[in-house]
Image (tube, rainbow, N blue to C red; front, side, top):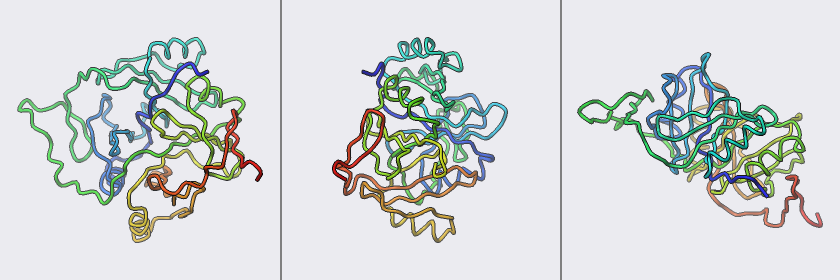
Length: 289
């Protein structure tokens, strides 16, 4: 029985070198929506998918946090107390300008994991411009003009995020027993992967390190996979794939201008993993296979 339940992924953070070079990929090509930042750090750009899951781009500096995933939990105080008992916290809890508490911890492999709550009292009145720069709302209450932002595609939601780990015996209990993520059968034919889900079915993939371990990455769902694949070919992106996953969905991987790995897939499609099962340690198998 898990101690807590994670409702959903609140945000995923990626480091970038230069906002002016990186932002057009996420804003104009992928079509993520610019939103005001709740951090008092000028190097942060915050964007959202269509379902409100956030992607944070942070220009690299001495203050840049490590690549991390932030989860929303129902009982923040209980989670924070238990994380302190486990000596998992790396910083004191803070009250963000958006009114939510937050604390950053680390899993047994040192991957940064942040916790916050669901929607709460909002105490900031900020606006964001087309370049992802957040400022206090002008006295006249006006909004920056974002009408010139015409994205090529729209990202419906984050489908999964991936973390590398050392061994499942060491790390899986943190995500399974402490955080309460749900184990699900993997759609990859690799004995080193563990697939888990939050309450809203966003997936967290853990991959034991080895010669085939992929880089930490975020996967987005799109409506028109063929159109985005064609456009990436036209733009001469180096593409890994496309491949047909075991769940019936097409998928491909590219890298943004800073080398962060981005995976593209579709929404729910033909599922071919119904006969697969997963055990308590995240091993997927096909009975009788």
